[in-house]
Length: 212
Image (cartoon, rainbow, N blue to C red; front, side, top):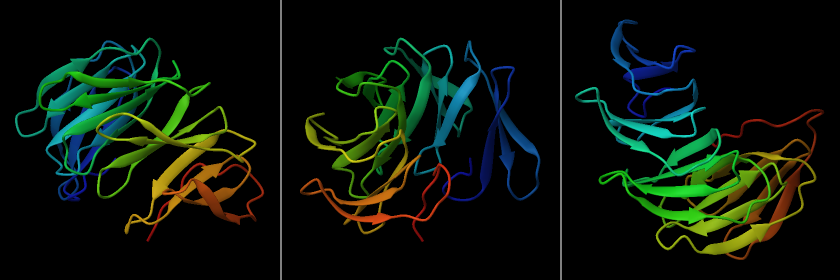
């Protein structure tokens, strides 16, 4: 994963550590330790000052990249962490797991804000809207759910995919939500929960979606 400011690259190793590289020199700047299991997912904060890692030990770890010190070990999930995502202003971290639950965490205190239930299978993907007020989750249960970021309230359940939802993303202007699955790509009106378009043509599974 690249840091949003483009100066660093993070890689995870089977020995449960994460290495932070300079994208300019190619040299290792930091080695982050503390996880008791292999790392399953990593994510830089939008301001590039923190790194979060989900682990196969069922926990999430958060480091301060200015000091290299671990800030928190976030414990609530009961299975492997499959997806993590920061909100745009770096204050909330969302985590999804094989346990079918989503947790929202305060990145300043390390406290859990909400545990969100409802998905019937593994959480594969998470994405915050650019303004930060809501986020979407994609699951192996073939659905997309839209949640309020502060209250944790469920706003919409989007159905129509016939295969696991592997990727969700909001457009940069925040007006559209796109979901990719092993069947097709759908565009949604996230205000109403209505599907607005379907992009068909791939002959196999869609694992990643990106806006220009």
